[in-house]
Image (cartoon, rainbow, N blue to C red; front, side):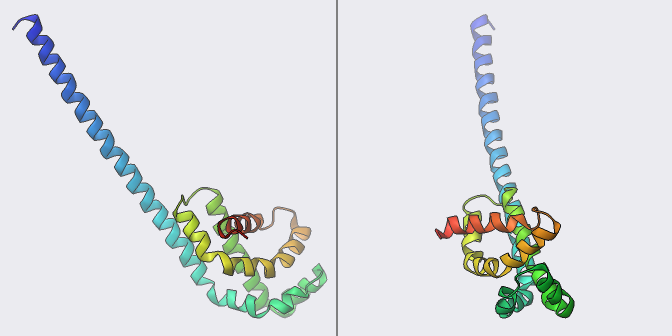
Length: 165
């Protein structure tokens, strides 16, 4: 074989290598996308499972909205915590689960369009709960510091932006 034959063999070999490399990169990218989608699906299912698990507590918070709206200071909230521990636990559980949902969204665990669909799905109910819980959350912030349940505020902002409130 002369030099031009070796050059042709080298060119063919390089072309085959390049085609194989591009094909394997395409496969790798598809695998990465599928892995991301599987992770997002898992996160989404966990979020829904957690929110479903507090359904009865959410209903208690809704049913107690007038009582909670009358909470104007820490003394009134401490009275509810002492005299109505089931309601206080419901407020704590509901606010914590939505706080954690906000944290998961802030961490980018759901990407668009899944993120927007989740926010639309929980939106109206969450905004109603947020309005009920906010006075108590603000009292707890006074007691324990500004970082108390801050992801509720983030979640409310995100829901409003998706729902255009």
